[in-house]
Image 1 (cartoon, rainbow, N blue to C red):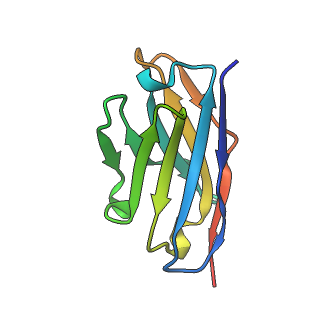
Image 2: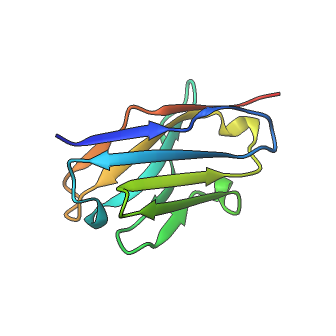
Length: 117
């Protein structure tokens, strides 16, 4: 059974930092591409960042230079380090795992990130 469990969300002031984590089980983690998506109230889910099995990363323009995605294959965990947070970063952040064939996608339950003073 595949499980993706996010953690680390919370309330942070504008300009602050937060790190969210996603622990995976039930998959060969090192072979999967991993990603972070977010969904704000009333908006569609959008891609935030991805990291391939080889470690190549990609970011949506609005977070470039502020967010960093990384992975620890020994811990089956992917991270999203967020700096210089803005109110518009407020959303539920979801972890995604994509199989090497791209035929299987798995999602976590999400973790709430709120940026507010």
